[in-house]
Image (cartoon, rainbow, N blue to C red; front, side):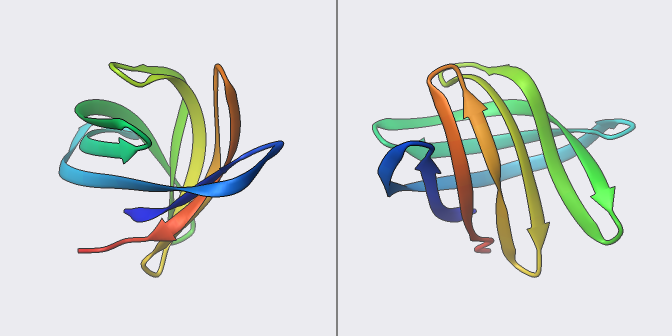
Length: 104
């Protein structure tokens, strides 16, 4: 996932990358995403348990107040469709939007 994000109330956009190294189903709607997350000065690989819900044929990644080691605690709703993603995020220091492409 390669794209950009914005912060509410702050000008500009920021580059971001999420490389999904492994995705496996845990139980029900919960999946374990092992992801390399790159944004700003941060570059970490972490396992993240994520709830995936469906709106018809569209998966929606959901996390609510989830503590991610080395990154912080976040809430997000991100939909994926036809090779693109878009959504909202929030954390302790703010929130905003995120969007980009799925690159294989």
